Length: 430
Image (cartoon, rainbow, N blue to C red; front, side, top):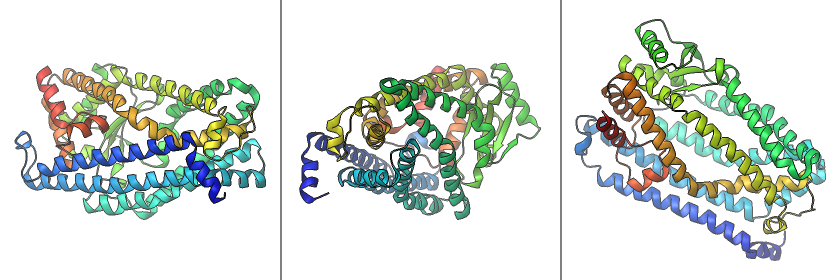
């Protein structure tokens, strides 16, 4: 691409709009981060009155340091991501690579799917140093990292292998549907992708998750008896409660249930079992069961399905817009050929995050409401709120959570209410 062509590329209206949107997101992220950092620093000298008796001075100071370290590192990573995205979109490298790739390997379905995967892998490589630093420097500094370099590398190799083994055939099928169904390809493609996602939900607990972690049945004892009794009295269908070796990678803790139908199981991190008492573990499980009983999982699944259809509809529409191709240096041959849709897929994937960033606060409002409802269910199931309150306090302390986020920051980013917000709701309802 000549200098004149590059200048013309930047002068195209949609190109300028895309650039402004990317810079607006990066600016908003930095502003929110700095706003939160200043708010946290302003309360760093002593434990706020609301947390006295919950967390001691050294631990509070450590949570402040961890919050600020993660935030400042996130600022650097965010600026890098924005710069990389701008470079990839506006340098002309994508149309150049697409032209070279198709000239060498042709425009068969398998070649086009290969181009998408090679591009995705190439774009993920510059992020690896940041992931390494976050794990082995930042998390290590605060005592959370327990993984080894071998495990870290194997995790990424396994993830890559799974993506190729599962994702490549799926993408090839989606591209084949373009040839088979012409203008309605996006409806069939969305249906195929949704069916694949549901299939993964079904088999992942039994096949995929054990590739990364070891799952063992919760040992016989009072904890197991209490948890199964809770599942029974709340009418939560489960055949197993398992402990996952989360400590293999981190000292952070969590609990969740996964799978569908007969493959559903409750999973507790071994770190969580070590940190909480039996009543506290029971209350955490009651909270997770609350998500199931309140149909939060089905509601989120419904939204996910709708988003897949919307995404493919947008891609199909973009694939017909010659101005989009000209804006980023691609050639559009017309029609519904897969070779015309692949650039639209790539551009959509690269720009979707810029748009979804502004939508995420509204999704988080919905998510936080779900958390309140699950907390209320747990309080009812347990007959009291104190066990869950104590569990939330311990988890906040052990994970060095940000106890004093700026309200704007938490409302924009947090999918869960803050500790004080959850405590207040539990006590008022109680």
